[in-house]
Length: 129
Image (cartoon, rainbow, N blue to C red):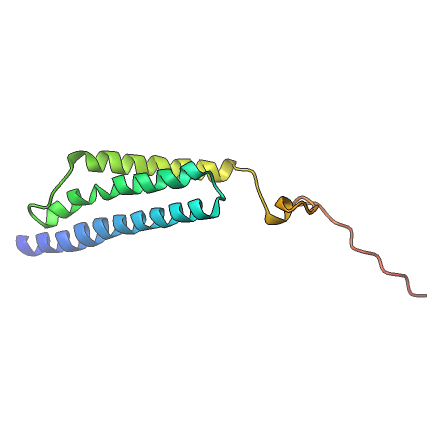
């Protein structure tokens, strides 16, 4: 009974739940960082920092895999540094998105566009008599 519970916990909890979930989060943050760097919609430092913290967060995977694969190499500080810096990057990303000025391609091109929430009068048509 104990062996069955341990096998289920290692497979379902550690390998699928934690390891796969964290790998998908790392893949998401790498993809988002590359998009930030290519699109230039956010400051460059956000994209570069995202790539760095994703690498640090990846170093935590040894700790998770070591529970299921005995002898897997572990960097003890990987969990603390990787998880903490990734969480701080997520907070900085959110603050940057919320605090950045709204830019639209039309406004950047110099075309006069009314602000959101303002009413623009409809063109009048000649009255029919």
